Picture 1 (spheres, one colour):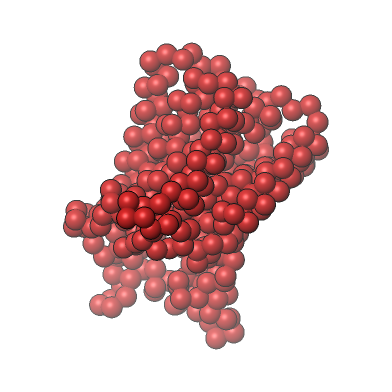
Picture 2: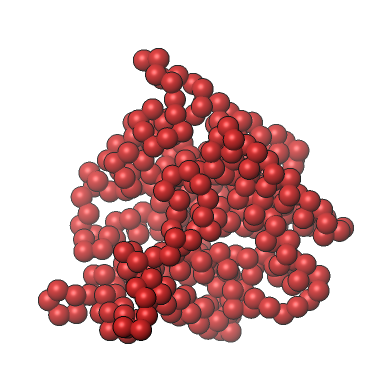
Length: 361
């Protein structure tokens, strides 16, 4: 884009800030419920964060490649970026607290947030480079309906009927377990598993389509109307296919894309139309989103590794010394620690922005 859409940068940065906040509480024993994922079915504010980022990846794909030639050099750039994201994600999985670089390969987790972003980015970019928007819309609808039919109605080889619950006869978990085995987050499922990556591609495609709408937007009401349609579709579909982040259900795709579109519409109206200068603190992070997310994960893991005394580490020492106070509740102390971490990365984002340091992964 010759002229950046400010609201996209603000939403991207806001999403990364929330991602850091929910990933770095003072202690996982004391966290406010909205800052936790739903146990299984359902939708919390925390469940919106990852789909929001994939949605924004889709918008970025639209503007980055709308004028690109469909040639080998473009595919090389797409593949290179995808491999970098997957590599960074695997690096974070290897670099586990208390076991740096010596994690047993037998139980090494293969999936992860950055890995899914890399895979989704690659597939979505290739689709965008080869198909018109109507075809992309059709592909998205077919994936969502097909995913629902498989998880809800396709019986297993022994005749057992499938389920949407967290059990062995859930197709998403079953396929991941067969392919990944011990290389998952939990023994029975992985929230960034292989099969659930399929509908997450549609989340990215929805961002591509919204990017096209933004590029040709004549009236803001169409953006709000699209959000309403997506939200209504998601919550109605929830009746038959429960909203669920862990398996990235089709209703989850529609509902979260709806929320992302609605919040983007509000920010777009205030920032790009009314020219109100708010949200710059998030824009600073948004300009180096992947870099700051990776650093936050790496530094957070490192703080568990560096010992303070015999039985403590930097994370616990800072949390217990500064934030655990008698006049604060345990949940509030934990939240304040997370907010301080977010402020640190906002400061880092501001420094990088002012120094014109923009790292493209």
